[in-house]
Length: 134
Image (cartoon, rainbow, N blue to C red; front, side, top):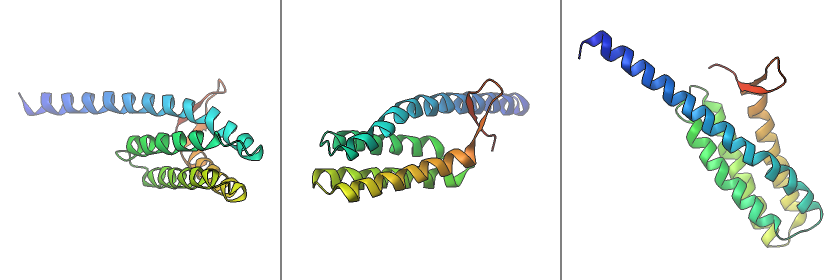
């Protein structure tokens, strides 16, 4: 294969992978939103089923981190890691019946979410959100 053809093929392949990763990120975020919103309510109600939600959020943020790692925005991976760790702490606190600790961990996880959203997404003209270009 000629060098220019190879370079174009690699460029197109990278663009397609990035689009696939972005679609996977959006899909994962659509799962996170309702779970995270419900988690705070369950913690406030001292609902022990909140532990499963926190564990699911922890695993979803592990996936988010994997999706962010290849991108240029290094802090997004840190935000994802922090959220995952905080949801893990929340799950453990819920299991132990430590509701104040669970609420604090959930609040810290939410701060990580907002930090990343503020830094890496923008509102489109139609009211939806999209990732800022790195």
